Length: 316
Image (tube, rainbow, N blue to C red):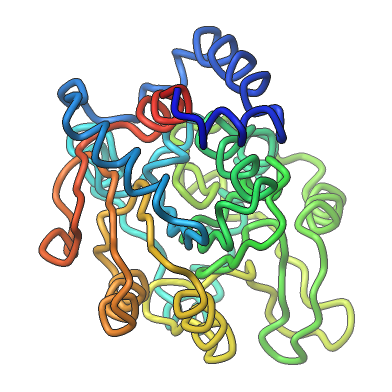
């Protein structure tokens, strides 16, 4: 272990967290069912990434669905194990959700059934290490493409939820917001006889249900104005709010490097952050199983499971 990392560990007790992480990871090996296969990490890649993190003092971290697969949440695109590989279903489009009452009924019925499980997922080693590195002043900001709230559950503070959060619901008419937990109580009250079991969990907490199971599902309207309720998530076909985009750009420019964890950067809202880092002349490192749209911009690319490589680096 280098002197710099040893001091970091002593000050912020990261080693104790690593011991806990190693224990919980052994217990929770079944949660890796949605993690695609990859080759073991080489010593050269490990050393390069460790140097990258050692030489950075304000790391801006961009995380994607690949870090949450290790908590048991499937992603969309992973080869063989992602939603697209296991089903012909595709995410609901923003326009479709807004215009179709039947689409909203189907979405909320499946989301209602999947919520108890989705809301119970817990942070894994990657989330916990990022929290500790933020406490140590090493990580300046976490920008996440995930809507699962796991960074906040882990204790991270400066987190930008690029695509929103599944833990909040908003009215499309008056912008009134309520907790997803509160909506669950309302849905339960309106659908007392709804009995269904989740068949296949989706990355946003949605599940597979039959048409018969959703036909009589009652979807509530906004308690303030009677408008349409929607998860406070940026759906496919919608745009990230401008204020959020500007905040992300500011964080990238204030950081001295960008570390991408578990994202293929397939959507432009993620790739745009890479381009901002390039324009700001910030070094970029990527840890992701499989290719990304930004591999050509990265000084370091490691094809590995984040929950495997980060604990190793913090133990060097």
